[in-house]
Length: 274
Image (cartoon, rainbow, N blue to C red; front, top):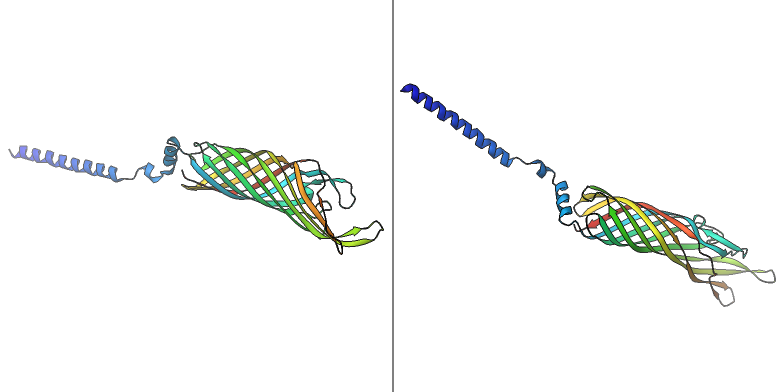
């Protein structure tokens, strides 16, 4: 009888310890953080991509710009009166474009919108467009529509490529003191003041870059652009003032179009709602 009682107590005790261990293991499993909760961003991005990673997007950026090619061809030299070509490399050092983009992310991979830049152009002294000791101020507006393709929209680092067209508007203001030669051979001091606008199409603007996501609604990354354009319309006037005589104002002389390439390299910040 005692032997049977002892066996019964042993079985009950063993079952009790086993049940307690199993209960503790289940409790620990339920309370232990899973791998998915420790790193939720990739899962969150995947879910957003599936359910519509789209919405408005705004970007701002700052760049350094360089150019090659022509501002215009066959302009009239102030010193010789002969036709001369004005190259971008002769007219400017660099430019500092400030970029703004407004658009919409249609889906995780495709973006459409408009872009625009205002850029300060740092002018070189030259005999054609900015003589020595003259005050020369140049700036440019560029803007147009753009489409973009994103390669890794659900990744923290998302490379992209874009294609755009647009319009370029170059503003030039030149003024300074000069000398005017009279038919008699004598020279008189004079004041020269010219305001000119050159404008024309951006035929193609290729951009490449990447967005590095720093927060859910903000990313930052590099950007490189290369564009081909031409100033096809030139308007403006120039005024020559000689002491003791009324100012003489005339239209700027006609020039021929010349193709040019513009390049920018910089960084942009992106704000979005998805």
